[in-house]
Image 1 (cartoon, one colour):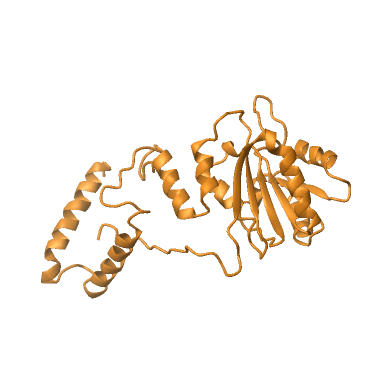
Image 2: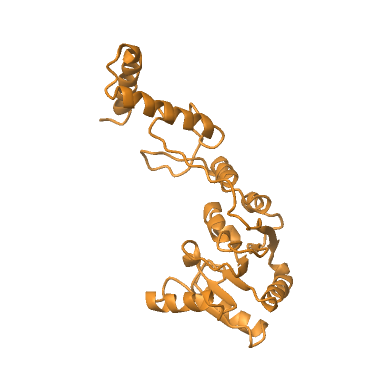
Length: 262
């Protein structure tokens, strides 16, 4: 019953009528082409997100910021394209006004920090460009990408690598070739390691001795269901057929508590 307390739900299909997002990872030299593509989408009636890692310029930190980037885009695009900014330092009422205007199609380009990571649903938005994508985690980038592709239109995500590196990072290549959250999580786990459940290490070698939470999901699910059946019939494991299981489980729990110093 080691994995008996795990509940596993798998959602591995897109909702009906949604198309897979098309991705690209590029360096900053691609910006003019990206802007041209964004304008083309806007002229077709669509909307755009641009994500920056910072709210404003910060001494000692390189990277695009929302406030300056908004001004830059207003100089790039024609005045009839409305551009607005959104970030966590704004009051809740201000953020709501901006998001409602974007959802209503009154704003064509929304320059934002990761405050749009979850809970935002604008099916008409078809382009997401992430500046300094190398500064975000894979899970966070995947969540951000999920803000587009929510309607019937083909959607696109442009990951802009802004650190000047000649080669695209392995992390961004993972996002470039897959929209599958399970695959991305698995690859992220390989790169970083899972860390400790009881401890201070946040990444490290994989120590899941009896299974892999991604590759062995079916087995873990079967273990969970079997454990539930056993406990439903014999909650304290007192029946003769469960005596050995009770003995081994007690020994395992005793060893585990000793390792924790309890």
